[in-house]
Image (tube, rainbow, N blue to C red; front, top):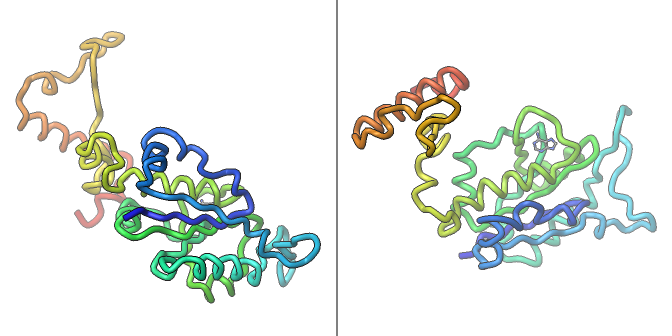
Length: 231
Ligand code: ADE
């Protein structure tokens, strides 16, 4: 089954962006996933193709109009019998933070419909009426949802079956076991006076695994103690 991504955006030219390269790009060429963009502005009906308006109650910025966005979303659903089964994600700094767990769930499904916000925000009524799941990629504000959508898709596509070059390289990485990853080393044996930790060249696989787990725990405690809560 091909994983289908449909993006609703005012900047379709921003896609596939970096996803045309490397493993994701090859998988796209091979048809292991598909990417369609839809221009939200195409659903505006006035002469100026207006998609935004001033916020009710006043204040700075502009708000994406609910009627236009609803029409765009309904168009995806009508043209596609899969759409009702695909989560509708709205990229937004107000959203629930994206986790590797949610990425795994999305990758196990048929695909996603992603709405990229611009301006100050999206009218709340279309978020409610079309059951949009607001997703944030971190506690900072981007100028639009497009780079966030590309980031989410990157995380999903790389774990689709058959996409990752070395199948094993996906199993022991940051967050897969709730920990940050242990440090990595490769030749030369000495770099600017720094040696590879001796255990890694000992050939003792049990000792290596133990060292890696300890390093992962140490690093996680230092940088992300929040990840250890409840462990
Ligand atoms: N749009 C703007 N900022 C964002 C963020 N942090 N995450 C997702 N979408 C966004």
